[in-house]
Length: 314
Image (cartoon, rainbow, N blue to C red):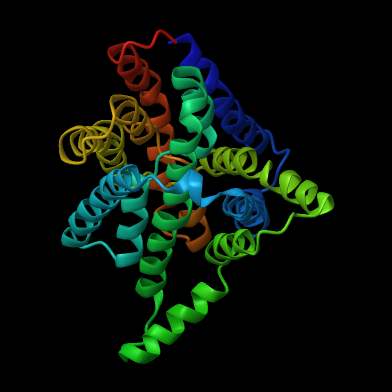
């Protein structure tokens, strides 16, 4: 319990720092949007590029684990997407809600928690999960949001508009560029490594501060917001890890260690990626921000109980 708290407390600290700065007037009313743009256009693309550029096929070739984690994330995403569409939500809004319920915080919490619970063996599965979440799931949500925001009804013209939007999106271009660079098998210049480390290191803290800034803004209460956020949190913290456990243990029959790592990664709270999308596209940010906070708070209990159940004394 204490080890989990040690990992999660800095997350709350950064969110509170942003919240306090906005409420005290240290940062202005546009600070959340501007800081989020910095993350989306500079810091997060640097992190995605660096992750893909350093990955090797030997590390990533874990087909059963990849399929297990992918199906679990995609399944939760699809269920929430369809549910929200049937309730009358716009495709862009439903897509943001869906990724908020299926996007585990593997990058910021997964690596340190994995090291505490499983040691060095957790690095490869966590890297794979981070790539799947930050690149594949993220890209899928962006595609659906872009499709929802386009007004063109002619199929081929709609497709061209979406492709043009994706080609200009740094969150899509950067991991592709990183994969292409990795395929060249050339050493990255030290100056470029330093540049990427400085920028990528700012992604998570800036995103969390931006979230705090957003939460500090006084907005009229929207009916149903709390209930939807609670539902998405329940799905994220309970349903997704349960589905992952069933797939890992009974469908693909992973080793016991990989089953445990997959379940813990799936049980992580919602990361800041969905909030970046919600704020960037100005869709459902109020629901997403509540989901991130509720799932992060709730994960202190759920992750601790899960690790204790698995026999790890953290």
